Image (cartoon, rainbow, N blue to C red; front, side, top):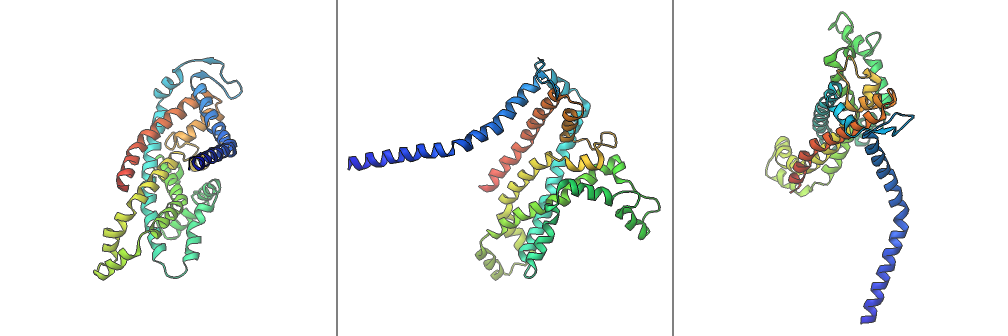
Length: 300
């Protein structure tokens, strides 16, 4: 008996060593991909670094102090936070509606699903170019339709308006990413138990009552998780800003991701861009912590 236990224990140790040996390349690659950029970012943020000459001298917290006092950067943080929260909320609400529609369809589900997913399958740069052509004041479809129905006499330049430019960017991002949210919520809806709906039908609940008292409470944990994912992704919004407005007019659409890109790859100030990146990470962490706590509570 003791010999058998010793043999099993030795076999388990050999299997564990073999598992570590086989997985070590993947672990090493993961460490290189994640740890090295983080260390480089931290080192660059406390140094004077340009794109061609990194780590010229150590400057401590000078870059962070400069970023906190920079009105353009702090404004971009506020703007990015508002856009991320608003976009995530709207997309989760729309995605839930689309997911319920897909679940309740009896015919043509595959065709409708394909059509809904088309925006998600479009490369972000191409989607932004499409919106720029549609909204072009000179010959764009948007202005042509409004003129055709007699709503305007002069062309509208939504991307030239400080108020409407950020709304337009958020709308373009919502158009592209709502299918992603709908797909995740739809997968969650398919896991809900059918016997609960059968009981609701026997109790005489109508469609709205079934959604409000059964579907919504059961799908809330999924919605919380999807909202968290989409909130983080929305902080990385870049392509529509780059293609549609380049941060303008003025700084009205200057989001943090675009400002960091411009600082690092156009002004070549890598150290300042690194400090802004770390401060953005801190902001995202602060914003997402309450969402993660609510997510845990929703799963209880």
